[in-house]
Image (tube, rainbow, N blue to C red; front, side):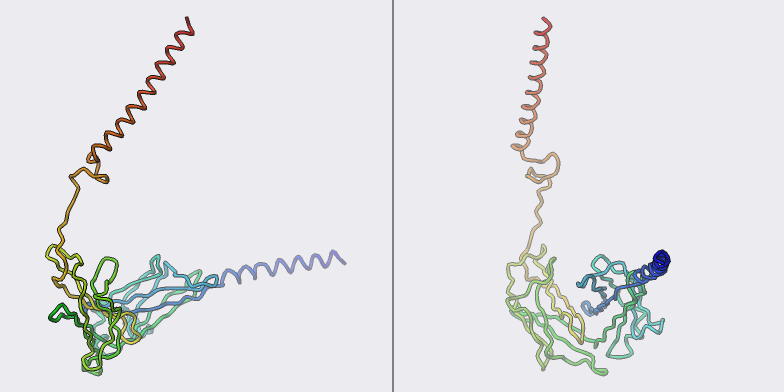
Length: 291
């Protein structure tokens, strides 16, 4: 009787284990796609998506996820803007092509969609973003003042927009350096503009002292990310200096400081002199032993 029950238990385990393993194999994580829109200097437009998933209780960026970008709805394949694959930061970028011009001009409001196909580890994902067409323009005024203005398309008319935070500064390699102590400026209701005083007089520019001033709107819920740039001669003229053919501590081979070369060669000569001296002494000792 006990043997019969043991056999039944073994059969039940054999039947259940594949089902458990199969359930574990098909279990997938949910993928979140965060879509952003960028208007670059009122010339080019691009979309950026970041793929994330909650793994072990924390949201992590997910690389190597194939994604497709659409304008309008994803059900109409003619609305496809292009494809991409997320990089090591979980991001994929696509520039809105000229072929989307007709769909872009249909309405002052646009809807973008990004979708991803199911993979072995993740389910299908989808993200969408609705924006209103807007432009950000930058200019200068007397006394090194920077002006920026936002207009949005309302029906068929471009109108100034109030209460939008604008960052005004100087474009640098590491990002944007604010024009002064103020971090952001809200646009006024009359002109949709802001005015910022430039207080970075000692900032280095190119050979002619040119720098790039920039105004940006970051992650606005309605208008997305806007930027506008302008070159002005407000920087400090910088002359490129090189030590390529001079003797310095970090120079190329053959141009190290003389004192460093002398020290190195002295050490080499001293070490080999000691080795040679020891070899001579060993030879003398052997000769004395033979005698």
